[in-house]
Structures are given as structure tokens and as C-alpha cells.
Amino acid sequence: MRNPFEGVKLPPDAEAFIDSVAKRLPRLGGTSIKDRELRRLALYRDSLEVYEAFVRSVPSIDDLHPFYRTSLEIVAGDLNKVKVCLASLSRGVRLARRVLKQYMAQIRASEEEEANKLMRAGFGRASGILRKRKECVKFLRDVFAQMKKLMAVDPELPTIIIAGPPNVGKSTLVSRISSAKPEVASYPFTTKEIHVGHIDTERGKVQVIDTPGILDRPMSERNPIEFRAINAIKNLNGIVVFLFDASQGALYSAREQIDLFEEVSSIKRTLPALNKIDWVDEGLREEIASYLKGKGMRFLEISAEKGVGVEELKGEALKELFQQNVGEEKA
Ligand SMILES: Nc1nc2c(ncn2[C@@H]2O[C@H](COP(=O)(O)OP(=O)(O)OP(=O)(O)O)[C@@H](O)[C@H]2O)c(=O)[nH]1
Ligand SMILES: [Mg+2]
Image (tube, rainbow, N blue to C red; front, side, top):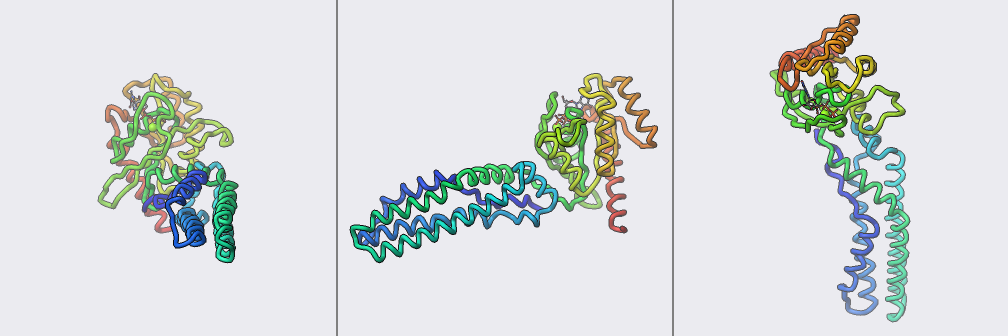
């Protein structure tokens, strides 16, 4: 599946649109003054098509898969504002068309010497209608420009979602086990968007998702970057591999990491793994390991960077994923 926003035709800013129409008017001639002024307003009317094409190219928000609908909500901040602005722009364009038609009728019925004045009045009224919506146009343009750039995620494919706190080595792991090559760096929130890679298996294609780090804090305090990860965990079809940082460089305590793990594993089936085992902090390792053992959970110790335990983790994750998918098919 492709990103459903890929085909959106971005609308020009209202002011830029009006300017570009205005610049084209002097070049238009005609057999008479009336004919020329009519052709000018007709040019304006026909140019409105860019906005109609934009509105038509936007997929129906209510029909979007929850993953993409939530992605749009995260980028826009408010889905309702998107709907209101789309409706307002559609209405504005219809209104502008009607106004232009009225002025064209007046020009047809007028004297030659009135025609230019009427054309300018029509141009001004139509432009006023668009200008009133310029904030909406700008908002929609910004939102959909961002949506178009998102990597294509297929919400139906069996998916391994790599999640955990910031800087624990998620992107390092994703680049080791899949075709994705996300940026890796030694600071938190390096990953700000969802990145997608794939693994080809005998049982078909598996999607691997690299997510931004999530902090252990209430949902209401989380930022849009963290929400992107939560959205993938909630709305994609598969399992989570949760990475703990058990190293001497860990930025978060065992408690914070465990609390986050509990939250994530309450949303989706989750396979835990302790990363950076090549640089282990024995205290952290012990605390996290005894928590997981206490829960009767299997976990692996890996070094994503050095490649230790990575193939085993990939194997376990695929096994878990296919078990789960078979389970779902039966259900
Ligand atoms: N010692 C050690 N360092 C690692 C390991 N895996 C990753 N790192 C380092 O940890 C830092 C963070 O790695 P990333 O893969 O960017 O971590 P991330 O979880 O994707 O980080 P965010 O996207 O910021 O949440 C980088 O400096 C990596 O080189 C590992 O197994 N051992
Ligand atoms: Mg990352």
C-alpha cells in the first residue's frame, strides 16, 4: 500500500495565487474591451480549478485507516480544523465562481466603457473571498506537504515495531535486521518520524518499523514525536520489540524503562530485549532482568551495534509475529 496522501495536489497560497492571476491579465487581449474583460474573469474562474483539484485529491478523512488518520491528527494538531478548512475552502471557491459569473453577466450587459471597472470589481470580490481563507489555505498546505513526505507504511502487513525510550539503539537494530537505514546518533530523539524497512521471509514480506523514543510520562505531557511511536504501536498489525538500555550510558533508570515497557506491553504483544550488552551496567541489567523474570517473560540480551544476539532476536520476533498472525487468522 502507498501513503494515501502521496497524490495530494498541494494548493498555492492565496496571495501567491491572486498575484499569479493578476500578472497574467495584462497579456490577455480580445476583439473588444468587453470581450477582453470577459476573458480576464474567465481566466480567473478557470484558475480556481487548482483549489478544486486539491480538495478532490485529499482522501476522505473518515475512511482513512486509523494509523493514517492518527498520523494526520498528529501533524495537524486537530482533525476538525482540517475538515473545517477543507469545507471553507470548497465553499470559498464555489462562492468566488458564482461572483465571477455574476460580474461576467454584468459585463455582457454593460457599455464598453464600464467593462474594465466591472472586471476590476469582480477580480477584487473574488480575491477578497479567497483572502478570507488564506490562513486555512496555508494551514492545509503545510499539513499536507508534511503528510506527503511520510514514508509509506502498510497497515495490513505483518509488522515488527521497534520501540522503547530514546537513545536505546532502536534505529541501530532496525538497520541491522531490515532494509531500512535510519539515522543513528548518540542523543535522544534522533528519530522523529516513523521509518520503514522490510524483511523478506519464506512466509512473505514483513514490515519493520523504527519509531521515535517515548518517555515514561503521562500521555497528556507527551509531544507529537512520541505520539508517532504510540500511533504505530496502537494501530499497526503485529508485535513490538521493546528495547531496554542496560548500558553504563543509559539515560533512563530501570524503573522508568520498566514503567514504559508495562505501558507498551499493555497495548500490544511485546518482546523485550536488553541492548548495549557490550557496555553493560550490571546494576541496571540485574534490575531489569529480575523484573522480567519475575513476570515470567523471556528476553534476549543483545548488542545491536556489535551484532551480538541480533539474529536470534530477529528470529524470535518473526516466530512471535507469525504465531500471532496465525492466531488472528483462526480467531
Ligand atoms: N555500546 C553500544 N552502543 C549502542 C548500541 N546500539 C546503539 N548504540 C549507540 O547508542 C546511540 C543511540 O543509537 P540509536 O540507534 O540512534 O538509538 P535510538 O533508540 O534509535 O535513538 P532515538 O531515535 O533518539 O530514540 C548511538 O550512539 C549508537 O551508536 C549497542 O549495542 N552498544
Ligand atoms: Mg532512532
